[in-house]
Image 1 (cartoon, rainbow, N blue to C red):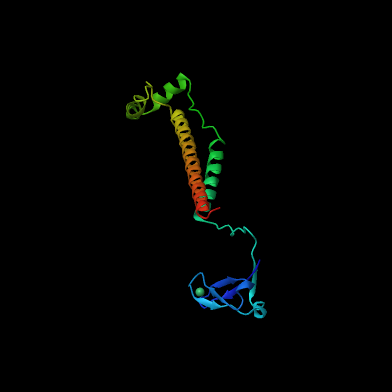
Image 2 (tube, rainbow, N blue to C red):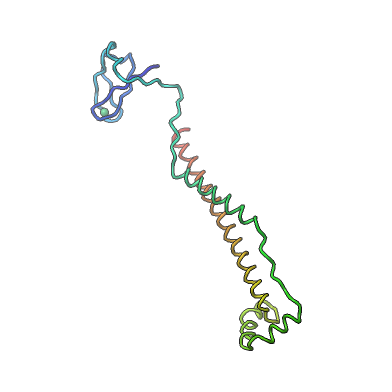
Length: 174
Ligand SMILES: [Zn+2]
C-alpha cells in the first residue's frame, strides 16, 4: 500500500493513504489534526512504499561495541597466552653453585636464604643465573596469567554485550 508523507507543523511526517484524502490526519508526535490534500493533490507529497514486516535499520549500540571489544580482547589475549611456554627455571651443577655462593658476600647469601629459600624449602641460595632464570620464568608466568585474565575479562564483556543486544531486541519485539 502506498503511503504519502504529510508534513506536520511540528516537523514530523504523518503517513497518510489515499483513503484519507480530503480528510484529517492525526500527527503521531504532537496529536495535531492536519488536513490531508484532496486525491489529485496527494501526488505532490513525498511517497513512501511500506514493505510488510520491514525491519528497522540495525542500530549500533554500546552493547554491540562491548560485544565487539570483548570478543577482540578475548581472542587476542587468549591466542597470545597460548602462543608461548614460560621458560622453566634452570638449575646448575654443584661446582658452579658452590663457587657462586663462595664469591657472594655473606650478608647477601644469608639474605637470599632467609627471605626466599627458607620459605621455598630450598636449603641453598640461588646462583646469579638461577635468580635471573627464576626472574625470567616468573615474568613470563605472570605475563601469561595477565593475558588469561584479560581473555576472561574480554569473554565476560562479550557475554554482557550479547545479553544487552538480545534484551534490546526483545524490547524492540524482534
Ligand atoms: Zn505534529
